[in-house]
Image (tube, rainbow over all chains, first blue to last red; front, side):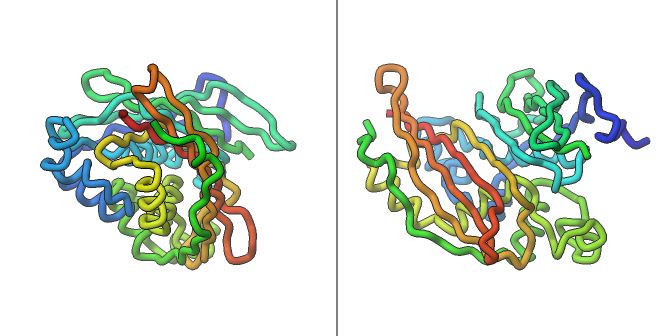
Length: 139
Length: 148
């Protein structure tokens, strides 16, 4: 069944949660190549250890992309007006990320009705990794 | 400690032509299966000129277009990737990025500051992206964190 659409959104409406497969080294290698983000921290465990980390960890931008999917699964992509996150904690290998969102404010900007959605990515341990928001046009 | 003199530094203006293949690859890398990112006909049915990029692809454009330019600036600031973390990322969208766009990127450092008595340094970049018609496409704001 289709979740309640953005056309009938109300304050407090929740986006359908998006839970991803566990983060694998393959996921990170593929993201490294596809994103143009070639920081070795995320694919080269020798480099990560040299930097003082036990192993590679996920790109923050990978989780932001997942949060973006949660938003654009719900509202057409060309209605997203802004999208902002803070990277609060690292996402480690094998962790399972879940993205959630909730309409926190209804607003009108330049005659356009918009909703501000508070977004969060969490691991299966309940650790918040990203916090942010997206503003989307409703009409 | 990063010298405040870098505030106002700009990378050279860069151009980047958006091709279909990187959009498809990026969508696949993030597990996005909506055909507007991979199938030309589906994208056009949804009202786009061609394949449309997922929202955070704008960050990738910045990396793909300016890997060397950004690397050079970080070296001049004395910042190593070993000590670098991503603190915040923000996008303000004017229109979606679509395959065929020829984008122009202008990046500058808008702030440099420290916290925790200098243990952490912060570098704030802003990048304005426009298309070949001179229209604004997306503005990015990126806060990098340096562990000193």
